[in-house]
Amino acid sequence: MINLLSGVKTRKYISHFLSISMVFVACFLFGSTRLYADPPGPDARLVVIPFNQNVDAGSGGIFFSVSTNSATEWNAQVTSDGDWLTISKPNNYTINCWYKANSTNVVRKGTIRVTALYQGIDILDSPQNVTVTQAAGQTSPSVLSVSPGNNDVGKDAASTAFSVANTGTGSMSWTAQVTYGDWLTITSGASGTNSGTITCSFGANPDTSPRTDVIRVTAPGASGSPKDVTVTQAGQQPQPVPVLSVSPGSREVDKDASGTTFDVANAGTGSMSWTAAVVPGSWLSIAGGASGNNSGTIICSFGANPDT
Image 1 (spheres, rainbow, N blue to C red):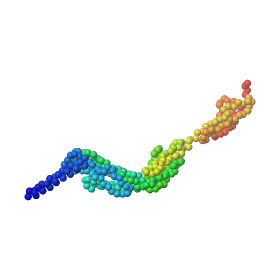
Image 2: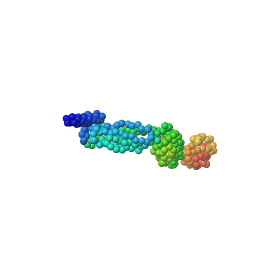
Image 3: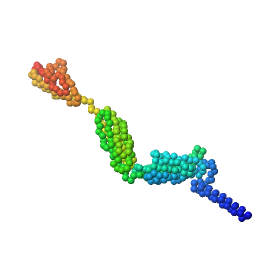
Image 4: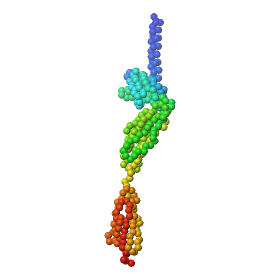
């Protein structure tokens, strides 16, 4: 009877010892020197393992382990762009992750933010960001090609286009935007995959000088990206400016009655109408060419000079 009781007591002591030992081991693993009851203390600590997981280019699934050193509730969400990474929380210790295949030649990284609160306040090491880094799906790069490199267009309102192509391998996503000037607008083809057409529209150029706008096409991970192409629009024709020219500026004539001439010309542009008249009281008269358009000859006559 005594031996039986001793055996029971021995098993009880061993059970208590193992329970206490497991608690201390858990505290050591989770980075705390205190024992926590439920509800948790304010210095509970969030632990997410591992901090990053590298995965291949194919689709698949992985998981992260979560501990708060207590019964504190936590939540997780994907904070990076894109829909290739999704998560779920099957229990209070695990984040399940699923990722889609990467069909590009660019390594991509997804971020998951884990947050644990105690009475509305983040516990120690909360929030934490953990990442999934997925390898590129292509070994041969895409090559961005945009043609032509420049489009010369007329002065009036119209449209023009550029062709985009992937002259390499694999799949190439690209975007286009106007990066210089404000008179050019992309009306279609602002983004695409592999090949496509960028269509641009523009208004009339109000100035006489030509103007240039720039379109930048970007294909992440592709050789030759980004690529700039230009649209150069001609200016308006300048307004004609006639310039009157009369030659010679002076003529010396003999004392006897006779005649002389002057040549009139338009040394500028456009059309120029002109008239000629003798200053009142003069001894000179215009015998022909008193008016004309652009060029002509003024014929003058005069009598003998009676003075010495």
